[in-house]
Length: 94
Image 1 (cartoon, rainbow, N blue to C red):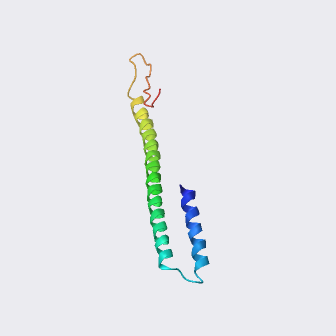
Image 2: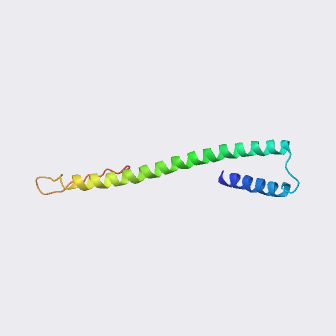
Image 3: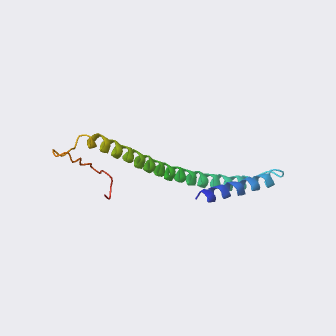
């Protein structure tokens, strides 16, 4: 999607540059306004998708840090009476 938005913006910039010498008619202005509205919607969707990816990455980082801290804190507390240390593993899939 990012390339679609970038290519549309580049195309409009070229068109505006080419038309700037002769002026832009009201109908051309309307077409450009519609194009900009569509691009704004595309940009909003891309920003939302990026925000979701960033939240997911932040959550994975937090989870890993919490698992490490919990393992460290509980590792010192859990010990067998015979001196065998039991280390909990809070990672998924283990």
